Length: 92
Image (cartoon, rainbow, N blue to C red; front, top):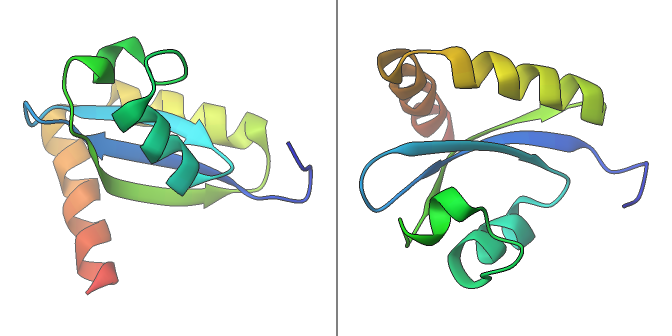
């Protein structure tokens, strides 16, 4: 992966309404992998397809992205939904 590319922390909305957190440098590619690939897509999302992007935020480095992903994963479902709702409002 190119070191110049920014990293992103993302939340996916799964078909069962659960949220999945991950990090990537290419959200479009990663979303496609989660929805179509049985090797590169996460095991969690494979049985919960289709998934859609619910939230994304940039990070400067992979380390920062992974630290933020860890923080988000520890949040309650309610707090994660608040993140998603605030993200949706900024996209309108």
